[in-house]
Image 1: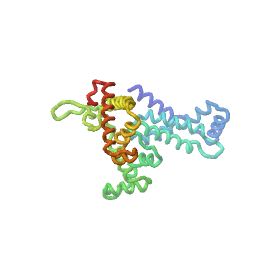
Image 2: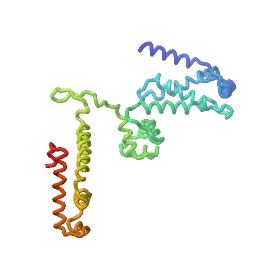
Image 3: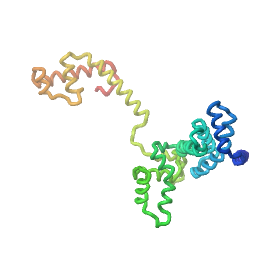
Image 4: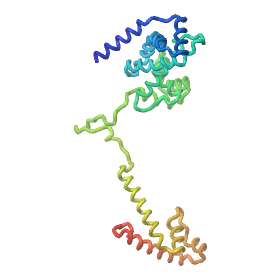
Length: 288
């Protein structure tokens, strides 16, 4: 750990000692890199602006992430800026690179600050990085503003819903908690947080078992239906296998027979089905 801190201090010291570039030097280096991919020119241009990366990284240190990692991500943004920079636009490289460096750091923070993904839209990203600052500004120099009014003003300032502000405020109020973190119960026994999560859904093995059993029963039923005559099959399908079963009277009218005759055919068909199913699987009590 001490070696890592010493190496970082040396890196920061070297970055701060790097000479500044004049506008002419900067333009010449940018042209050489853009036109000939001169690696020496790129190194000089980026080295001269590492102090900018370090300064921007220090603004995000309160998110609890490693300064070394933030500087590395900022360096990626600096290289991206160098690749896109157009020296003939009469804009200093530091002005152009600042946006790329900050964007690279912000993306890194959003990916690593929490296990839960956040800041998926530009408005959510602005809310994430500005909530603390806006909250402090609105309460500065006045009595403590009611929470509801504070959330409403922040939502209007950033252009998001009040619910989004409340949710982001709750997320920023504390770190992630592992579901595997130990919890000591009142009786002294230990358990994990996840042991106290209530779920009414069946276990996975039960769900899979029920699905397999259901598929097997459907297969048995399809085989057994083969023993029925065409009229018996039609009556069983319309009476028993449709979402809204047909009445005896309605089915009798379709077939040109009485409803009593439909009932007799249905009972006989069900007996034949039961016998066929038991013949296939004699140990299945569900067919009894």
